[in-house]
Length: 403
Image (cartoon, rainbow, N blue to C red):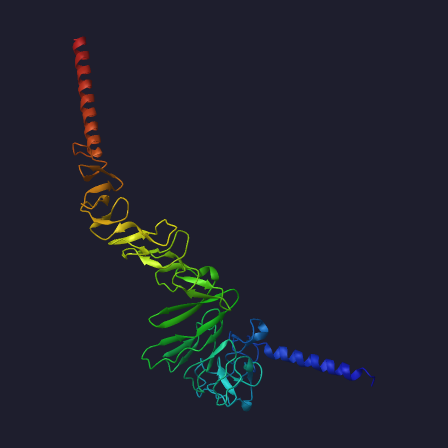
């Protein structure tokens, strides 16, 4: 044997081994007229582990009920997996799957996966009693799962998830790549869902956290979608979409309460023009700083470069109108009036009305009290009558002349 032969044989064996691994990682479904032995049921090569390519697809149900789904492939021997097949193979939704696994194996998508080998260790690295207790990054432990349940789920599995006991459903978050497990659901009489808490998203997406009634819900969004009371926190690694501290703030640059640039209706930015500040209520009164106007419901920030100022009131509470300089809300009985003074006298009418004798009258009504429509109608009638009279007179005189 030449000196280079052992190295060549080793290289060939290594190539064959790699080829076998690739073949093993490729899921093969049964086709018409083909033997079902060691084949996956049609459309059941739907488990992705470690990537999105065809080589990362594994089986979730065998074509033959008598076979065992081990490490994503259909085999004829159960081996050390402890794959317990369903008692009734007549149930097509369960036939060809495992219902529990032995130590070091765990249930995942219908099969038993080895936590100490491929591809199982890409999901979970420890399952001492047939239940995963150490998930890999990108997966989370399913609370309350037994060896007859799927005990680990993908952070991005927001639809299927895992249902425990028929009414406790645990899911991931769409687009999530890293997460922490959800809290365990208390006893429930109807289907109740709990989602994992996402900490990192795929691609350019960032985590947005919304907190309401003491509960926080995460989602994965594009940075451009982080608005309306939220801001992109670039100080966080990775970046995240964080709520403005002031609940009345629509646009802020940081979590601090004085970092708001746009407030919700009924509030204004209490800061100099062009600066950020806290949101102040339009009717908040005080003796210093930025204050509102008593009775004001809609306002804009004052145009000032100083550290204090009064809001510009645009609308007041029912029964009141702003003064013409928009610094007060005064009682005003005329609903068609835009501004009233402190005595309740109208200073300016709404569009379409004119101020006459201290009251707002419709601009389409003349002094006689007749509308322009009525006047137009009368004018037409007069023209018709006059025209008829002229015609009659012409006929009369023409006929008389001939006579």
